[in-house]
Length: 568
Image (cartoon, rainbow, N blue to C red; front, side):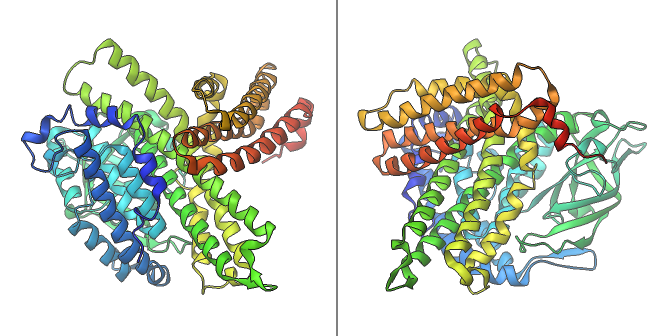
C-alpha cells in the first residue's frame, strides 16, 4: 500500500518553506530542550528530519490501516447503547494504532508528553489522515482541543489533562445546543457553582462531534440572568466523573465513523477553565480558529483523495477505443481539480505558518516579556492568520465539494454506485462547508479584511516578490486582476450601505481569496517548476471568476436589493 506522505512530494515542498527555519527556532527556543529530552532536536536540520520521520509514520499508518478500514467504518458507523457511544471496529483499531505510534498530542509541549510540533507539520498530518478517512480525522484531530487547555487552563489543569491526551485519550468541544447553532451567544446549558466552590453542569448539547470523549471542553452559562455571550464561561468535564449520557447519535449523510452526539448533562461535575465570562468572547474564538484550520486541512485531504480517484479511473476507463483521460473534456476537468487542490493546499500552509508565528510568540510571552519588535511581529502575524483562516476554511471546503462532485462526474454512472470510493468521498465532503462555521459565516469573518485592506496589502506584498521571466505573464495577469478587485471594493464600499456591502461580501471575499491563492501558486512555481502548469491553469480560472464577479458588481443597482429580500 501507498505511504500517504511519501507519495505526495508537494507536502515536502510546503514543509520546507523558508519561514519554517524561524518557526522551528522559536518553537524550540533555540533548541534548548535537547539536554532535557533525548528526542528533542539539537538544530534545525535535526528538527526537520524529526518532522519528516513522524510524517512518514503517519503516511504509512494512513496508507495501510486507516485507509483500508475506511469502507467498513462507513458501513458500520458508530452506535449508541445504554447512554454511551461506541466506535466501529475499524475506528477502534485506528485509534489503537495511532496511540501506539505516539501520534496523539503532537503539538503539545514535551513536558506534558507531546512532540512539541509546530502547527504546520501537525496540520500536514491532519491532511494526510483526512485523505485516509475523513471521519476519523474528526476523532484524531480533536487532540488540538488540548491547545485551548494549554493556553487558558491553569498549570494544575494542564498537568492533569494534557498528558492524558498525549497518551491517547480523546477530546470534544461541546458548544452547540438545540437552540444555539452558529449563534453561540444563545447557549443555555447551565453552570452552577456550589457552596464548596465546585461547579456542576445541567442541560443538553447537540451535534457534538465525538461527544462521548474522555475530556470535554464545554461552553456553559455561568452568570445568572444573562442572555448574551458575556454570561458564558468555559468548563472542563472529565468523563471519569460521570453525569453525562449520550441520548442519541445522529444518522448522518457522511463521516459515519465519527459519532455526532446529543448529550444530556445532569449535575455533571466540571472545572472552570480560565476566567468566568470569557468563554465565548475569548476561549471559544480561539478554539474555533483552531478547528477551522483543522477543517481546512480536512478539506484538502478530501480534495486530494477525490483527485486521485478521478485520475486513476480516467486512466483505466476506456470508451471509443481509448482511455477517457485522452478526451479534452475529461483532461480539462482533471486539470482544474488539480489546480483547486493545490490552490487550497498552498493557502492552508501559508495560513498555518502565520498561525505558528503568532502562537509561538504568545507562548514565549508566558515565559518572558516580548521585545517591541517581537510584539509587533506577533501582532502582524496574528492579523494575517485571522485574515487567512476564514479563506482557508471557506474556499478550501468549497473546492473540496467541487472536486468530490467532479470525481463522481468523471466516474459517470459508476460514480453513483457504492462500488467506488467516490460515492463515500462525495458524502463525506459535504459537511466541510457546514460545520465549524458555514461558508457564509466565513465570509462574515473575512469581509472586514476586505474593507480594512488586509487582503489588498498582502496581495501587494506577493506582487512585489519578483518572478522569473517565464512566470512574468502570469504575474502581469494577476496585477490586472488586483486592480479589478480594488476597483470592485471601492465601488461596493463607497455608498456606505451596510446592506449592499453584506450582499456583495461573498464576491469580494472570493476575489481576494482567488488572487491570493494564485499568487501563492506563483510563488510555489518560482521555487519548484512542477507547480508551473498548475499556476497557469488556476490563474486562467481566476481570471474568469474575477471578471464574472466584477461584471455582476458593475451592473448591479442598489435599488435591486429589494428583489433579493424575503420576509420571515
